[in-house]
Length: 310
Image 1 (cartoon, helix red, strand yellow):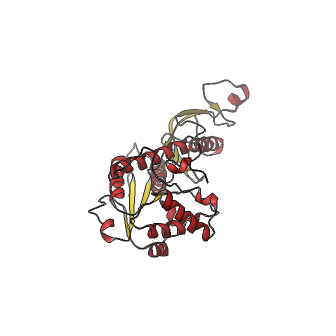
Image 2 (cartoon, rainbow, N blue to C red; image 1 turned 45 degrees about the vertical axis):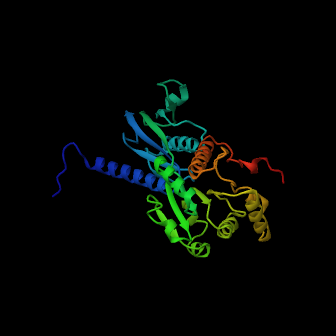
Image 3 (cartoon, rainbow, N blue to C red; image 1 turned 90 degrees about the vertical axis):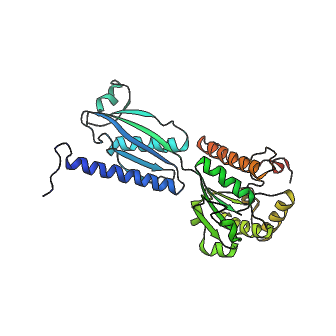
């Protein structure tokens, strides 16, 4: 016979289990590169449906897990979390009155009144959990090695793709979570637009322009006419980008899709060494993430491409 401590009732065990599942779900979504807004009940007074510790998590795609009690309270919290993800509201402490008379009279303790007969007060804390970037470095040479070192400091995730086996090795990229030794053709035999969504950024920076072009054209084909969340960029000179553009248009890639590709990658700081390029690239990623959180438009092109005329 199972004996429970007097201080730990069965409904508390159930509550803890639901909370653990919500946190595990949120962490899994973060691991997939999705931002998550989380609300937790931190205080309750009177008769309320959600007890202290109850949690609900919402992703930027509208998926959700957990509960803070259901009904009108939950809908208000979900709407707030959605606004947090869009940058329209700030996370923080919010109090809700589950009293119809407070809604009718406009009186009561400071907080948001709800059309409810429960009669209690619930205080929640909301927060934004921002997924760390997961960057695919297509080309594992000197610049990629430097970016990998910078990513370790920033606690970012890095994956490496290269046709050269030594450049996907642990020696060169000790912290890579994926090491992909493959040609472009072999790579795309196993990948599609859905699987590539695990990367927040795909940066094409290989040693051979023909390999880079093959990778870029395949990705552009996936992007064309589709909603594409992954940022795609490439190291490139004017001549290299002109060649890429010509090849892309020959296979029917639109100008609109080409405009989504960052080239050259990196903030315009006149970087030259691999270490300087790594700083420029990581700074651009940081800026892009900040702009997204503020609800601003994506970064447009920097360097020579920002001033060129077509």
